Image (tube, rainbow, N blue to C red; front, side):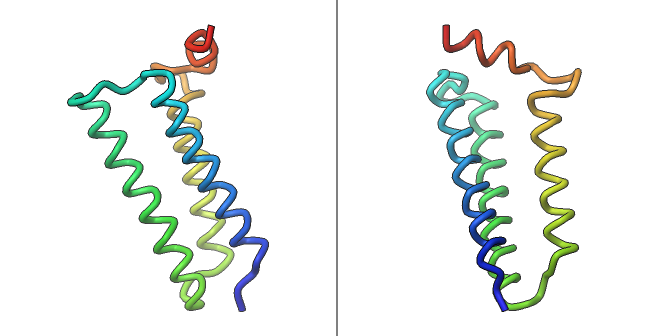
Length: 100
């Protein structure tokens, strides 16, 4: 049986992720015909493809709570590496300055 709360959380997370991608575009962070744009598009396709396949497998009862725990942890780790780790090029202060 499909848990509607899990599907709603997945949909909300997907919408927030799309908003994050739009934020990169609004800040003019990506230039046409650049390596960053290519990587950004590939990561987006992989991410949204993984979410879609995961929801399909969940609807078919092939994956369960343990899978979603690892999936969510991987997403948090990816977000941390992208904006909060000491190795990032775009910490929150950089992002806030882009809107000034």
